[in-house]
Length: 270
Image (cartoon, rainbow, N blue to C red; front, side, top):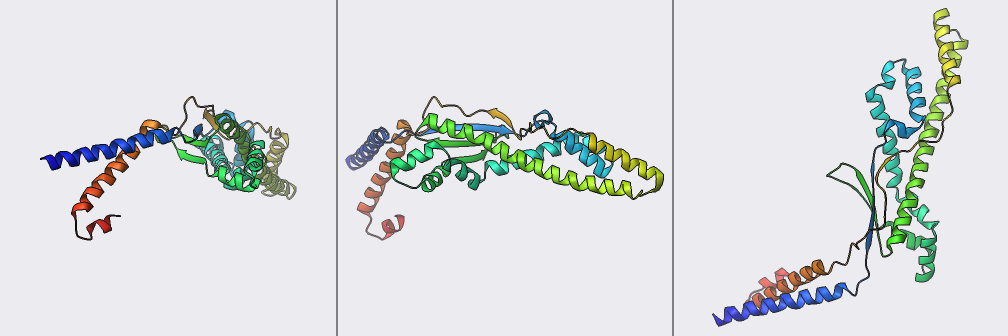
């Protein structure tokens, strides 16, 4: 009975030492702050006149009223958002952006590293994940400076949107030019006779009368803007104390088990 009590006391002592060490260690580590932004796919009003021109293109290309249906609107929104997310998760775009920031240049100077190395290290602190509760998309940055993290993330979002908008606009303009030339040629060649010629002329007139892209496309809907957090992400003294307490308790159990065992079982547990 005394032996059992002694062993229990030793295990409690191991756990207490570990918990105390973990708790104390938490105050020697730099604080980490997590800044998060949350996105959903845009609504049709968010797309500016991009959707109007896109639906006109699909109507003229397919001659179908379905080009402006609810399904077509949903597909357009998904297509735009997919391009935004492609740029948002692009490591190359993120690296190029970070290289131009004063924060990275200053860090490189202080750490005596190249800006490219510092930017690459910072890229690893960005996280992209789906919020399972809301189905929204999260992007977060963990850094030692909360204000710096907030600014880096906040400034990155407009750049991502610009990249997505430019690509979407360029693709639509390219397709529009091809279709315009096809309709113009059909009209000039009088394809399908007099009635066909009138139809082609009407389509040509429609394409000539549209307004140019207004560059107001927002390829996302911001659910949560990146803001300076009120509480640091880590270190968390209670969590670190629990973690170290469990580790030391495990070490105590291992030491007691191996102290009695004469077999090679302990060696296989390491």
